Length: 355
Ligand SMILES: *[C@@H]1O[C@H](CO)[C@@H](O)[C@H](O)[C@H]1NC(C)=O
Ligand SMILES: *[C@@H]1O[C@H](CO)[C@@H](O)[C@H](O)[C@H]1NC(C)=O
Figure 1 (tube, helix red, strand yellow):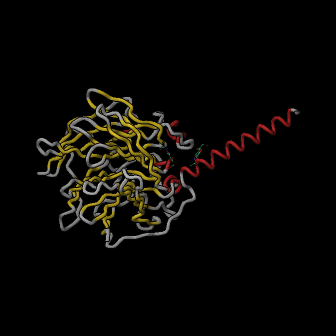
Figure 2: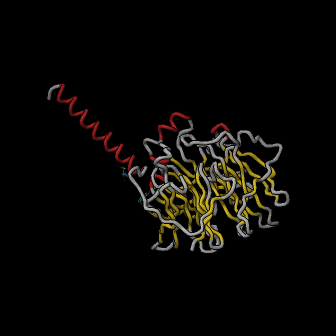
């Protein structure tokens, strides 16, 4: 073969490879996906929440905690610091209450992302764990919730090199938790480029004051994480693999993979109904519309439920879908007493009746 022929073959091979990559990437990001609306009755937007409600978790007594005001690279955001709200789902008004933050806490740069609550079995004290990204760094804040006065007391900031790009956490003790890292790299530019290769490079880390270790890896952008009501299984949203992974929790806090359940959507946070054990997820329909945020062609919202996840035949159901004209970029869904709360990365929060 002549030089020109060799070069042509190389260029052709490279184009095929690149084409394959682009196609693969667009499949991972679901860039062509659209859904038809599937609305629920009596949906109302929660008052005062307009800058996102990225994560929501509900206590057994119907008190929801909401993390609001996330600033995430690539998303539109406000200049206001993040906030934590509570919402009493048993009350008549559905009015979120902004929690008072402690004085000894750096509020200006508060950038709350995933949250988890831990109730001390010995005295019922509620601890709120918050993933915080001041200056886009990653750290975990542990607060004590004080019902009287609706405030938070700051107890601890946890930083560790293995907790370098934390998305979500699930608390398993007073100072211990599992956390997902949604990127492999820590460098800002590499983090951005990583979104275009979407390799299965991200992981789950176990943290306790005595031990910090990677307990599971191989995720395409590990996202939401939560635990079964009997605390024996951990669930991880493998967002760009369009799956939810089930892992068994071992005595030594390591995790053993059990299975991966395909969900056909880009599921973000996972909430678990304490009564039924069902998983509820806020999912993104199409990542292109999320990243190239255009109000004229907005990113939609989708809520997916998984029933009987541990059985041979988990049931995956789309419970709610909207093309973005009602609610944009759903990231979490949580249920209590026949009501469904839907939160978003940077938009509003909705409360709907399930029936
Ligand atoms: C992307 O490519 C890999 C390797 O060629 C393949 O295993 C995977 O199924 C592809 N992913 C999608 C979403 O098409
Ligand atoms: C990714 O999804 C595929 C198809 O659902 C599944 O077979 C595979 O196990 C998943 N990979 C991981 C790491 O979860």
